[in-house]
Amino acid sequence: MSMRIFEMENVFEIILSEIKPKSLRAGLAILTNILTTALLYLVFITGLGQLLPRIQFINIGLWILPGIAAYIVSAVAFNLSLRDLYHYSFNSGLIDQIQSTPLLTYQVYFLKSLIILIKSGGHLILTSVVLLIISGVRVHFINLILFWLYLILGLIFISQFGVISGILAAKLKIRSEFVIIFVMALFMLCGVIVPSSEYPGLLGIMIRYFPVTVLFEGGRDLMLGGNISGIYLIYVAGFSIVSYFIAFFIFRQWTRR
Image (cartoon, rainbow, N blue to C red; front, side, top):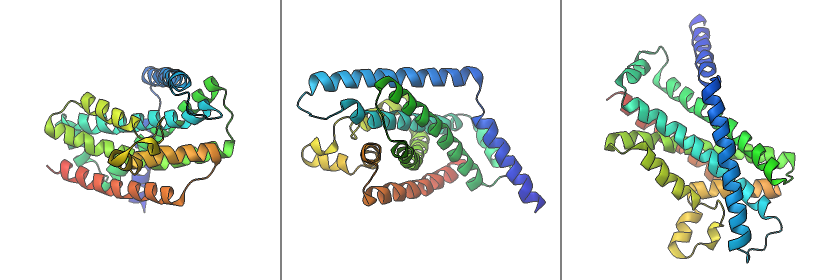
């Protein structure tokens, strides 16, 4: 019993030490988040207003707000997890620390995933608040909470995708910056601004059922109307669970190399 209590204390200490704000780094992260959010909003609101006048939405600002929030926080979650594993791949000392810790491998991995999820959730709240302030859009509080919860559920598979990408990029000796740029360009196609139903042919079908598209467009439905398709919810939850175990298996094999 005392051993389990000791392990729990170690777990809480690790979580607190990882999410505890470091003044300079936290300040830069917050400033970068605010500037990126404001810039994307201004660019897209201008683009939609000037280049896509045929789209007759009652409130263009309300339409793009959930898309931008989901896009930015997905970029944060993917970037955090990819860089974390990429960094470990080139530092054998860090891998030795994982192997020497009193915690089991699945506990270490769960902690790492939880810490990334907590940090990403903080960015989600910050991004949403910044967007609401600069846009002047009013959203029902319940809808906003549901949007946050749904996005956090989806961030599980986004972060696991980052873990897998980080390990593969390190093995293939591909710079992490190139992977991030490619993935962020791919995410931009997933219903951030233009609905996936507008894409023609086979490309449209592939994008429409891509997990990130389901996450982004489902989040928009929640924020705008407070409801979501049950299929979307099951799809995102199922994909998050499956991707977690796949990523953990790859992580475990990687630490044993």
